Amino acid sequence: MNKKKTSTKKSKPAESVLRKESDRALVDQIRRLQALPMNQRTHFLRVRHPNGGSHL
Amino acid sequence: MNAEPLLNRIAKVFAEQRLEVVMVGNAAAALHGAPVTTLDVDFMFRKTPTNLKKLKAVAKTFGAVILRPYYPVSDLYRVVNDDRGLQLDFMAKLDGIRSFEGLKSRSIPVEFGEHELRIACLSDIIKSKRAAARDRDRAVLDILQKTLDEQEKDQH
Image (cartoon, each protein chain N blue to C red):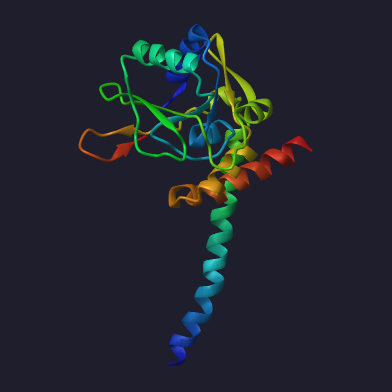
């Protein structure tokens, strides 16, 4: 039982650290894109597959 | 996929037809630096008989057809060429946006090839997605807001 309690307590900070890391990565990606001229931020178009689905 | 060749062609065709539009949606958000993707390119336009004729001419140039999907809120005209995977959506109404003139006055001209396309400002794109409140719009709101925050930091 003690083991369970400890793992629950540990998972919350770990989740928060992951969220912060994910946010930081997102902001970095935005900054990299914004460093380019607007007419070069063009890798956003997905291609539709004839039988459903899509790819970049 | 890189949309640059398509955007160059769109800018050229719109300029030839003198069709006044403002790019909105995820494509416009991506041009502001938001890491989002999309299957189509969305535009707002003024629905007038002249512009509808111009839209027909645009569709003809792209070898596309104009569809009217049932989405009455936007008064949507969809220009589609399935063989080329082309989908351009033209909306006369946009959730959260009062007028085309207002949207245009706040938009930014961006050069594609020898011509320009007007791109809606990011706060208008966010406002529109927030007002539309569809799941797929809500899903990107956080990313768009972070992109706007970074844009504003850059300007100050």
